[in-house]
Amino acid sequence: LLTTLGAHVTLVAPPTLVPVGVEKWPCDVSYSLDDVLAKSDAVMMLRVQRERMNAAYFPTEREYSRRYGLDGERMAKMPEHAIVMHPGPMVRG
Image (cartoon, rainbow, N blue to C red; front, side):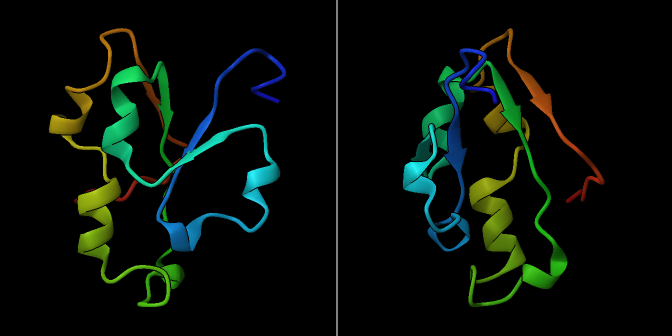
């Protein structure tokens, strides 16, 4: 839907959480949040379900947060006009 409205969409996730068949979707895929923040107008953060927090998907919750969490340092890389969207509930820390 977003691409139909003219948006350029980039999905960012660890390789183990990227959906099967994503290469057929009308979006780019990146494994690095840092690589895409500077050119983002909007960032939609999704909460990882705790039941998915196991070694099969990524090493630890801390490692996931370190690579994919949106903190002040990362937000500083975003353009001034960019917005952060989050569906909630938000996990702090």
